[in-house]
Image 1 (cartoon, rainbow, N blue to C red):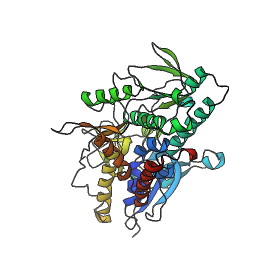
Image 2 (cartoon, rainbow, N blue to C red):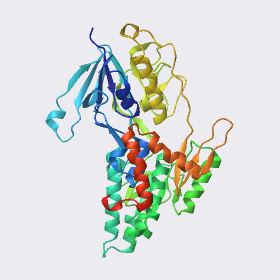
Image 3 (cartoon, helix red, strand yellow):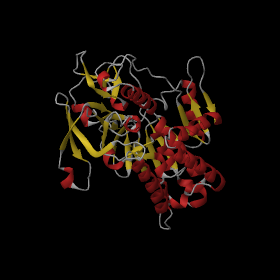
Image 4 (cartoon, helix red, strand yellow):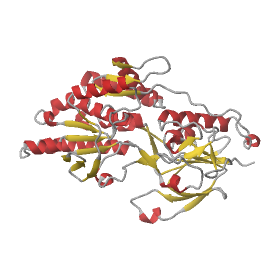
Length: 430
């Protein structure tokens, strides 16, 4: 008997875990994604600021250890009745190949396409801002930062222009925005003081958010602590800020007018990918558009129907459970992926049509964020209050090791920390 074919759409946290652990003895597994690597997103801010090398913040889909098939393509549409996905090769520099579309049939389909940055249709953002979704984004941040420092260091650059070039504007006051702010501030107060003594004093970091405060996922005591810590280090925390448009040199903020910048980072949230928007299944009606599933992660067929597809599953940021909404975090994605791996690997082919008897349950982990200068915050859980300080920073930093699935990378990260502590970051090679 031939093995069932499982197609995984996406190579993010959920897709990569499935590709790594689904049994290729029991199934033919195919991953379809425009990216041949999977990024460890919590490590991107640290990588962008030189804490360790770029390759440590991602893993290749193709591997000697997991024998899945990889197809570098975008899924354009899905024919659910015919169990077929319609794809286009993902090679932006080759129009000929990219136009040669093809179809793949599946026995089981797992949808984990992730999301894309939400610009909220703000004019100029897509053309001028940097994002932080993958390693290539982190590389772009690092390159631009040091280009700006070199421009400001030119002998004919006036002081006013230095200040404009070295204004780093970060839009988004969630954990990602605060953590990239913290890492940049650490870099500015350490290595940049030695390497760029003439211009480091002009580097200024501002964080903007439309909400009344940053880090809204935490309780008031913790987000106020974080706000005060950032302000103490001369980081401008600009809440209640509505950005109306952006050009290549400045933002235009309601009530404040033109605000020049050298680097603009946009880390405000997510929106659904076109595939999810076009898919004829039940989806959320408010906020981020996500595919609705039952507690076994099976996709509902239609808007008002209770019928499900026994052979189509969805997870990651692009999916949510009916009646049990969960956040769009790596932890949720990985826990759902583990559930599906256990479901598929624990069943024989004759049992695959039988719904899983145990529904998915999410085990909540404490939310941790770094706020700079070896300080952090950890959200409380249950009767236990949250806490701050160096222990919170150590808990956050240890995640750099725990998130990485490769023991090789874990060892290299630990060694890099030791080398950085003794000799400082190797900024010259950045």
